[in-house]
Image (cartoon, rainbow, N blue to C red; front, side, top):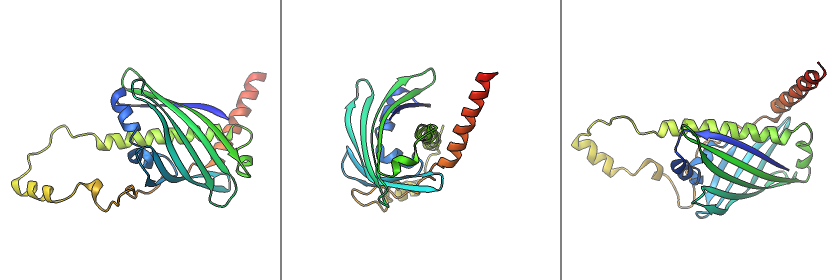
Length: 215
């Protein structure tokens, strides 16, 4: 199945592109996702958890940056993973590109997703997969914007004392503390999206649409 999503970020296109290509840095913003290993600049290992009604799914696999076009600020990612309990697998190809907006940038994403095994049955009907993807992208965008706000440089920084300068020089940067080569900093994964709430929402929207057409 194929579907499209988009979200806005308060950054000019060149900065938005740099942020989105830093996979290890933005991975914790993805709901239910956990990055376990940075294989190299194009390959990553991790897992993502999604709840569809009473069924909790946890896909473990890898993501590859398959193609990059810096001039047009577009890239293609390929992801594949298997459910930890052997209920199926997922393969996805996602192409995203960045367009300028009046006050920032818009990220446009086209996803081609294939599910196999028993897991393919969980997302059938009433647009469950599309609704789940939209919810995940929406929460990812909100988390990313919050992260960018936290990381924004302050308007003015106080002049440090000589003692503070010496202490800061002796201490390693925060992102380098307790980090092993090839292993990203451990950050708690965001809560997985609940498919049950999405299902109720989609069904209700269809009921409203049906009665609207009849009136």
